[in-house]
Length: 148
Figure 1: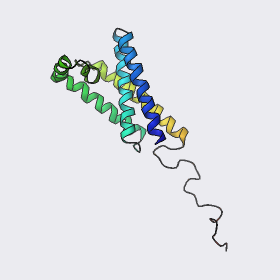
Figure 2: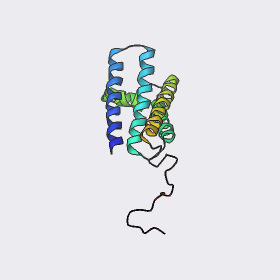
Figure 3: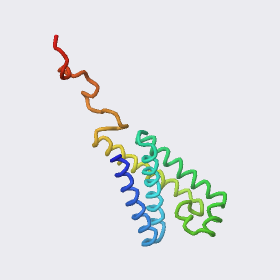
Figure 4: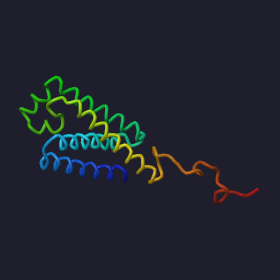
């Protein structure tokens, strides 16, 4: 539960930073940074939904979602939806650009790496024990067990 709360806080921070970039910066660099932040946000969302999945699996799944959204833009449907509901453009975008795929890959990879490092620092790569003595037999019998 603590991990999900932390991920939710990171997700909110990514949205705030992403909106700040979208509103405060112009040009190709701002678009690239925004797309990388979008990829990182999708990593966070998937990590919340699948907390036991490995960091690598989460990052790969996040990139796959981002790539699917980007390819969906080739249909013109996101652009038509954005004409009706402008906020849709923040989620689905409007026009396909191959450089967006590069930004998503970078954002997902970096977020996945941060997730992996934070899991190791917390003592778990997938929710299981990671110390050398994890799973080892105790050297002393549990309390109440007669010794031999």
